[in-house]
Image (spheres, rainbow, N blue to C red):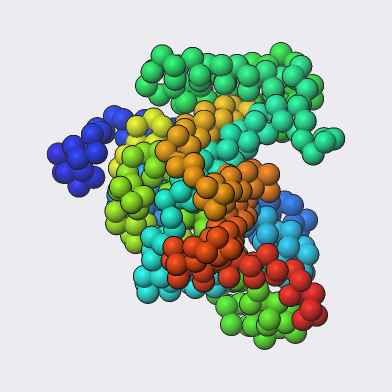
Length: 464
């Protein structure tokens, strides 16, 4: 115990093993949905063209577990890693279904994207770019992520749904929404009373309520996603189907994808570039936002030792590709554990061990309905939004880019889009205000890259 406390610097960060363990369990509970959601996108939504579902479940847990352990032990920060939402959708709906790529080829694209980001980390360019971002934009990224998380929570809880106009209020008379409302009320009550483990308690109680409602109303009428809010059909993962079969399968496509006539090399290059930018800045936004919430940033808004965080995250992208689970990245839901007091890598170690354990108990984890974890996301979103009071509300050349960053993230369902819009607006407004010298050279370069990012669809049309 003494060694663990010294290694993870409990005293320096004013924490202890009980708090860190509770934070790790909370983070895992909030992000455990990925165990079921990632295979549903990569394997089921691809209509037989993706990797095996059982293998994807097991590999999702394995890669997330190993890389989160690495984050905790090497970087000593409470950041958890798993298959990234968004990029997995690109793999399924764009590369596999849209472009007709074999899933092994699509995963090889992800591995290449990870390799490029790793090179940027090793050369110091990724960290240099993060340091070049002005403090106002850094804080607006954190606020934007908070709004994004809150929006996701409201959506997963069924309170906000697609409609006319674009989004509207969902039906409040359904059992899933009742579970969400009760969970949110309980979470807020416990948070207001400063009860330790508030989010975790809310998740557990909400899950129990969901199971009871499912039993009372019947599976067909209750409205929960099949397989959740009910006793699992199997308690242990079935290892009889060689669940590790997809590990390393993309290796054979690493070179051949660049020579296939079905996808021109310029198009493939643009795809890799777009994925790289998305992965690059999603992680940057998450690290800044969660680090700010945890009070881990220095006076300049930088995370000490961030290069270790970025290296583990970059290698995780490669591992996700070669493990056939899509790019693995630092998870925004890490903020849930931080809100429970997680401040060191031991929180990540707990999350990693739970992911590895979930290999054997994936059916049990999958019974937690999204309406039970959604309240935690709403509360975490609020906590991250409070960073807004630290923003210096100045002139239009600072204020408008900050606003654009914050609002575009939830509206486009993308951290990268928000950062891109804010960066381009910042450089543009500084230039027309005669303040071009205030812009760091790397901000000019990154903003130019984002212009290409926005123009990628037009470029692909021109080269066809």
